[in-house]
Length: 436
Image (cartoon, rainbow, N blue to C red):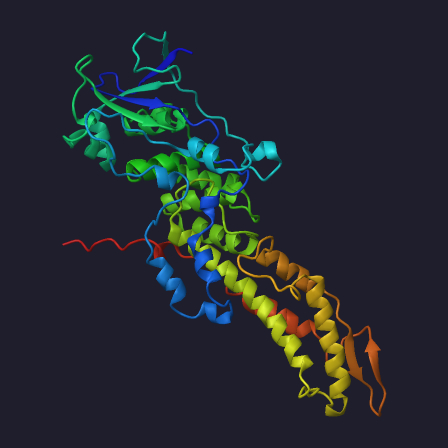
């Protein structure tokens, strides 16, 4: 395969060498072991009750830093790790997925939820040259000839790389006189897209891109710290995608993309919608697909999911205990307390068994249980209605009277559901320092 060269700047003084480009981006597959949030281990050590939602727990989680990272966050550290004379490597999603996942098929191939078909994008010009004999070049390398001044102005990451004398990027190569920056694992087309924007090659930048492409783009923008430099295009793309590919109502690959994209580009509306859906629809600790979504966001999603599922189960158990009690008094006729309590106790027990929350009682992390499915199943349960008709006659009827379970169950579902409203993006962001 010939080496591919892109002359982003017609008069370059630097070259970015991309090695081992990403081939399989953020596959759905099986959840990575590293994606299981640390909050799961914390919650398993304590007794899960409604008190888990006490004020202060969620707030303390917000103070967490990025932690040890997940997937790409862990290996794409922004800190330099190599001294002069050593080639710095940046392993990306492809390496992470290969090492950590059980299933290697991409989302579409596995039959799992996948993102929308890649939108048609403007093609970029490239110059292919035969592979030379230099041992430093590899068959799948991509070369991007760029301006070090533009990179330094747009990106603090590039500025540090090109000005820190401890790193090889800060010195020109003796052979060609260019600054050399070696990176790994990025999507080659998306890297070119970013560099074209930074170098004001606006006619080479598509006006519409897919959600997956935007997720790839956000990965670069987050890593190279250049959100402001690309803001015009990123806002245009988000506005388009909010209509063309809105935040999904199910737990799927696109939902993770929207959480990630809205985080990087500060989209408060999409972030709130996506996190609300995640809490309702996740049936496992939320996946990251190897994207560096901050731990504090993931942990809060997982914690609220645990809380609301536990609240529904605990509320059902509370109803059952109420009717089980020998002290239960029928609110309509105390003379019928035993019969009323027995009927309702049996009904709620059968209902809990039918939705699999009676025995064994589900425990954190509630594998295979989504809050939305739990509420939906509970809302479909048929309950008998108990009514009294004067004298000593009483019985079961197919019409709603006074002592029944429909109203309390509906109240439980409505009350808990009303607490799931999504998260405010600003609550996770560090406040900007006040200007002098």
